[in-house]
Amino acid sequence: MHESFAEHLLTINNIRFTQREIDIITCLLSGKSGKVIASYLDISPKTVEAHTRNIMLKLECNSKEGIINFVEKSDKFSQIKNHYLQLLNEIFFKQCLQKIASFIENRTTIYFLTLWCKKEEELLQIQTLKKYLKLARIEVIELTEEHITNDRLENLELNDSNKVFYILPQELINHLQIEELEKEIIQSVKRIHITPNMLTLLVLNKKQTSSLSKLTSNFEYINFAIDGDPFFTVFEIIKRTFPTKNLNEIIAEFERDHKRIRNEPFTEVPILTNLILPCEDSVLESNQKEIKVLYRIIEVIKENWIHIAYIFSFLFISLISLTLFKNK
Image (cartoon, rainbow, N blue to C red):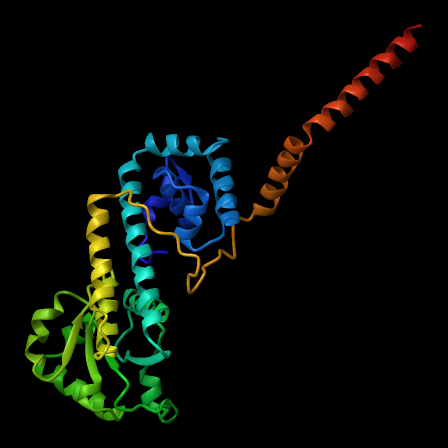
């Protein structure tokens, strides 16, 4: 679920877990049922059960209480609780994007101008923004140097109704003076044949804010810290894309939830059954089939234990009778 998922959380007491398993452990620790966990993570209850069984096998326990006891006695207990807050934040955020999507009549296309984005962390953040914007019915098309050099802009049909966000990474800021930066932006606008009012600068680091303050008279810009959460950056992009839409009430609701879960970390989130993009896990652990067979056998035994007891009793009596007959 989270692009900023902490790697150190995946190992607890020298036992390695998957990101999804940590999400489920986090929810179990907060007392959530399988149905609620499924709604939180946009997966089916059966998938929750499968992951829970995997966790039990790794911990060599046979109950959810065993999982909770394991975490409570570990040195990651407080970190797991903090992860739950992040999980709730994202849940509220996606629900907010769903409401925005229902408020927007038609799917909309915007453009990210990514001429200078080379670093992995920058590319990762761009993909994160695209993923979230898609939930709000906003498709993002990246305009790279290749598009401009090879004259691939003709089929894009850019017009004044389209918004273009020029991604400004740290590398560009470091190499150019403020005057050179402004010149580069203006040249890029001309190259893709758009007007300045169609362009918004998207800054990928807090430190760039002061450097760009002189540009604000000519260009709008949004600040996005690479190491921060993308929630409010996404909202800013949406508001710039739909300046005539009044989305303040929907966004304010998220802000209230965002503050509330800081004070009430085990807040229950309303279950939504009409999530836009279900994220059903396509790959589980490599031994998942064997695990399912094992637990199916156990379930069959539980369901038919009376019949099985009769069979074993019959075999036992037959074996004793046979033994007595031979002794005679």
